[in-house]
Length: 449
Image (tube, rainbow, N blue to C red; front, side, top):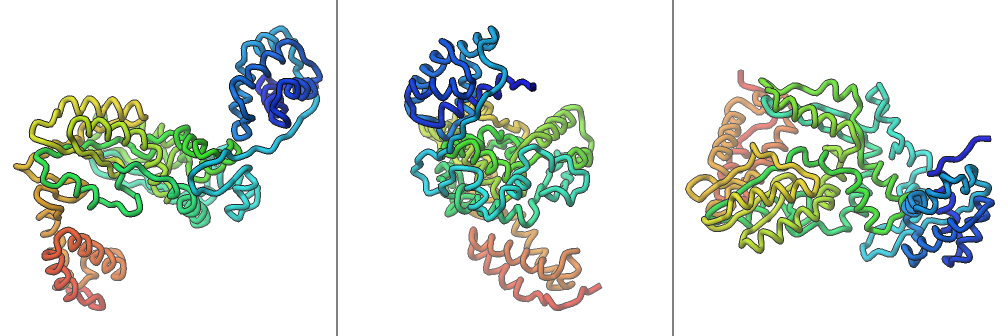
């Protein structure tokens, strides 16, 4: 007869504890029924369970099982073979979501998750990929993501992992009805409704010194355990948090990792960074390209923002973050060395790494630019960007839009309209000049060769 492992016996005992009234006598009775045995060790375990949890942790069956498995009395009894190696009976319980103050869906079981998303239990398992089977599919079409490497010259390449349509629709619902119900920290301006690069830039306008730090591999630095903790903090049981996390994370297939471009002229340090980047992509991570990743990363960076904001206030500085860009500003006497030490230490403590090569210290005597916005006197577009866009529009007027891009004319038109609108937000006068030039382009015209 096959024997059960210590983990299996502890899990069965935890389920038995949760399957009824939360009193010592009842826990002992159900524990003895499940194992068809008892003893002083069982009383000691049950008593400590009641001390640890005053109410039954119906949302944390796994945590209770780990507590039992690691309990000294259980371990000693297991070594002495006083604990049966075979579970006699199994008792079931209904996991339950803890009350929460946030307006998120009420989900007690994985079946509730499937029903909320309009999926069958089998479909939920397929999309959440709890075993990682999808990662090892050799044919790209069998996976849930389309992966594209973007070579960036001497810099590390970037991997875009775009979910396929059906998974993307599921992720959008998780984003809209769950993640966006939670407030991001006030210092976070990227991918937060009502905030933007403009709201971030406005905090640093006219400051004598602006300092920008960059976080390396922002999305892949967010560990699944922290993302899982966001769901658990909402009161979701493990059986709910696990598939929700699985829907929004992935592991990059080995065949895709093998195609990663090597940066131009890469030295030993760059190759070392590339190695760690690939190892991070090989494990579960937030895919850059999924609609849920930015919001989830913001929530996981909440303590990073809270700690840096508190330090900045105490030092008389302003602080804000847009995705992986950390921006500080303050007086001429800004404590730069101390700031660098604090940012590096806090980032490491929160699971992130600062890309030292991209740190920028900008004073009023030079162009102060954050997230593409110049902030010396007021939010503005840089002269170089304005001149480049003006020249592009002029070429389209003279030679026709087809001469400037391999994309469709419709796509080019949308691109130009977006760039012009962006300039108009920052500088209405310049925006009006560009709009007049844009109006002169004949998008039905053929290229002038």
